[in-house]
Length: 284
Length: 286
Image 1 (cartoon, rainbow over the protein chains, first blue to last red):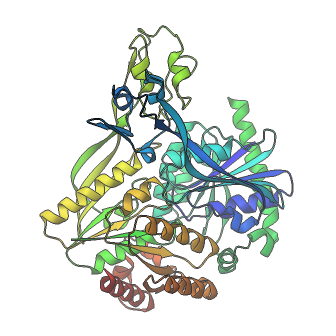
Image 2 (cartoon, rainbow over the protein chains, first blue to last red; image 1 turned 180 degrees about the horizontal axis):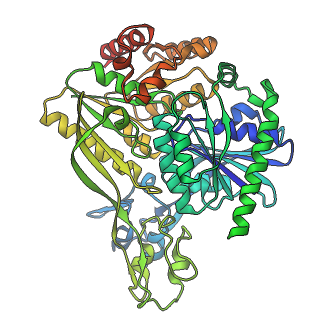
Image 3 (spheres, rainbow over the protein chains, first blue to last red; image 1 turned 90 degrees about the vertical axis):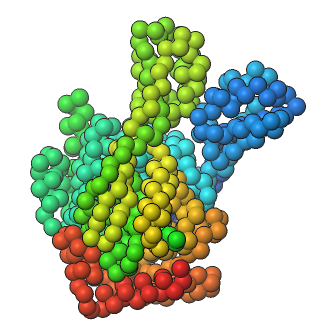
């Protein structure tokens, strides 16, 4: 079962929920940090890293001896990667989406693929199981291909928890798509609710069952509860603001470790997710 | 004309609340919301939209079932697994590369331009504002960020405004890269947490990579004084201006609920003077 933790707005507590949920499960869990632009889960679960590899995406390299400047490659490329000026052919690999169109159309076999460094894929172990995250190379714009690589490490049959990036566009879609349940973390503020609504639209588009965690639940107003009622969105957990939680977080400590009473609540959260997910399966 | 871009790396450190607060004390500005993916600045600015324009972001493949002979070439060619076995294109997975379109032997694939969002020029009580809304699950956020920043610049020139304040997106990827190019300076808003520090360092690396000057402030500084001191030390060692600290205060949320900036909600007091002081230091460094 794959659970993705998403939010729309940043800083609502996705990582807090993902890490505490994972650790509360005890053993046999996989925690995958797909917020590859700013991965933070490792700061809280302190994994012992066992593997680190650089991930590449394919970009064209043109053999100038073979190239006849026929322009077929630059014509098919929608991302302006290949430019021909007079007798000079130039490539801008940082713009490449790795579609392979240029190679498919080159009549001379003059194009081969080389790698553009996307960042690191690191894997290790933490107290409750396996840990995987991606770290996007600074200066690299495209996170979805690295997110896909992190997701390729998912082991079927395990409980896999994905810490997703914020927003509602391609990175978070790549992290959530095909998961069994989306746990949405929000705060009851106008910003939190506005972005939650966008995220819920995205999850509906993907057709994934979902539920809500309201973090800092006593800071803001009641609008999010009203919205949840109208949308039939189950509220699975509420975490009131507690300065002790915020201070523990600031040091990289887990709630379930500094305040053990939360462990049971996170276990209960998991069983509610399981129940909802099964109900969804039976209905479809 | 100058442009200050407010960024953070980590989400939820207070970028938008601070941008709005600065807007309420700065003069002769144009506001720009470059967090097109989850734009929130309008919730405090209550913009009166003057002009709304569709954002035509890219193309998406669409197979004409009448012409399709189901030869399977498109499925073999598509590297994004966007064409299903029944020869229907998954709009979410389609990257808009057009490879299937160009190489379909039957020319059975259309490639219409699709609307990916909208952008707006609005009036607010603090001046003009350019903002946008990227469609749900859309790509091209970087393109839309570039567009709103260009439009804010044009507007500032036309109105003879001296400064653009841009509320940026979280992270260090595509939309952030589109937010930093050509900026006069970045204000990095961080918080004294392990993740705030980690994410700020990645953002500072990005700024150095693109050679854009930065300044740093710490929000909610009193949640962890040691961490705040560590951030301040790190910043000072790097020769980056440290422009101040703001205490943790639920008043920020209360003002947000009322749709007000913190300075409209509390003219006086510790919070307001901290924000005003930061704004003064920013101006000195801009």
